Length: 179
Image (cartoon, rainbow, N blue to C red):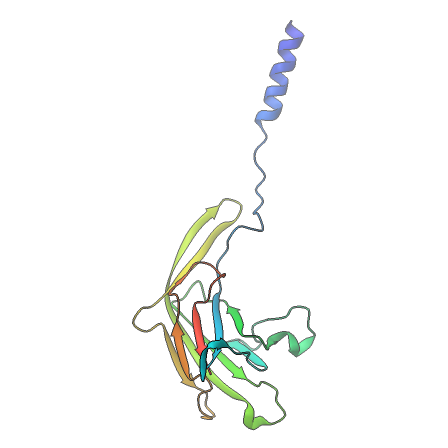
C-alpha cells in the first residue's frame, strides 16, 4: 500500500512541473501591414496593376521586399494591384517613396511620389509566447500627405481614398490609389 501511495505521489509531482509550451501559433494575428490596392482612374471599379513599382521607406536604401524568391533587385519590384507595407510601431507617421516604372530604360516613364501616412497606434498583448502586436488608426483629418519627388515630373497617383482607418487585419484594403 505504501508503494502504491509513493508511486501516485511521485507521478503527481512529475506531472505537476509540466507547463504549456510557449510557442506562438503561426496563425496568431501579428502586427498588420497597411494594405493598398490600385485602381484605374478612368474606370474606378476596375483594379489596375502597377508596372515595376518599387516602394522605399524614408531613411532606407533598399525597398520593401515583395518577392523573397526573386534574385537581386527583382525582389523589390512588384507588378500587382495590391501591396502590403509596414508602418512604424514607434512613430506616428511613416513615409514611403512609390516609384512607378522603376528601372525602365526610358527614364521619362519613371515617376516617384512620396506618401506619408499619419496614425496613432496601440500595443495589444497577444500572449506570453507571442508577445505584443500593434494596431494602427489612420488620423481622421489628415490620414496621408502626398508630395511629388524632387524631379517634379508630376503625380502618378491621381486620387487616394482611405477605405478603412482601422488597421487591425491584413485581409482587407485600407487605402485605394487611383492612377
